[in-house]
Image 1 (cartoon, rainbow, N blue to C red):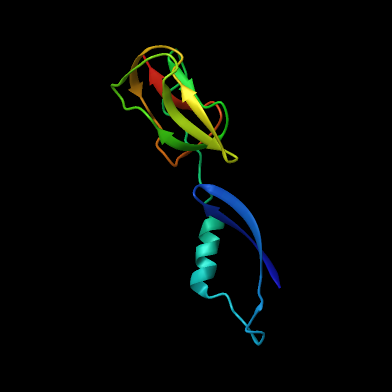
Image 2: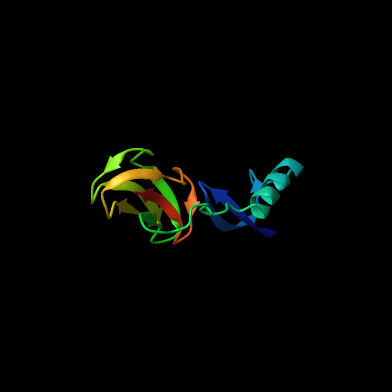
Length: 127
């Protein structure tokens, strides 16, 4: 008998088919209530992408694509130059460096490493 589940690993959702199979070729392993509850919670609560509280505007760096924040290379208050790496977004096993388009001081970083983001979300603000 096959059952379909959605699981979340490192902020990414996967649909999987699970089949009950005999252990050691004899008995079938039942799904325990604890396992069923854990799977149900994973299916019911897929990770939500960051909703930026900071509106996109002048000096705002936005996500060019949906993905997960791989790393943040700067801190609020740090001075940056054009071309400095601000953070890295990972999508489909590809890492995209988000670089400063203007020089200035980082005034906000509303995201953190490991957090999913949608395309267009504000990742940092440089003033």
